[in-house]
Image (cartoon, rainbow, N blue to C red; front, side, top):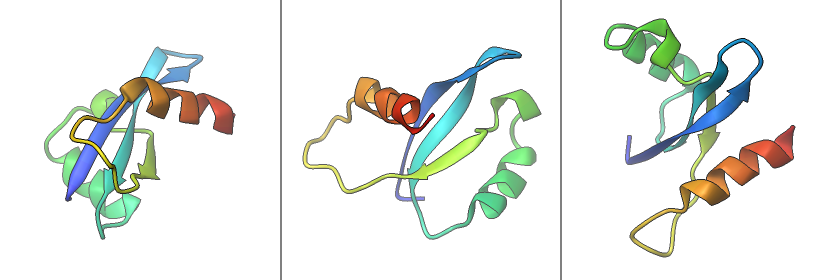
Length: 72
């Protein structure tokens, strides 16, 4: 995993669940399998989106959350 940013994604049952924007060559299934040994199920992202190369040092989490909302 080169870079990962986790943001909240709206969820009817829990209010919000983690969603990850990630730059890696691993599949979502690989990531879930790995994280299952480290985190409780409720903390494993329910969605993995590709993270594009950034131009700055700090990413805008607000913009990433807006991206999730626009996909709905």
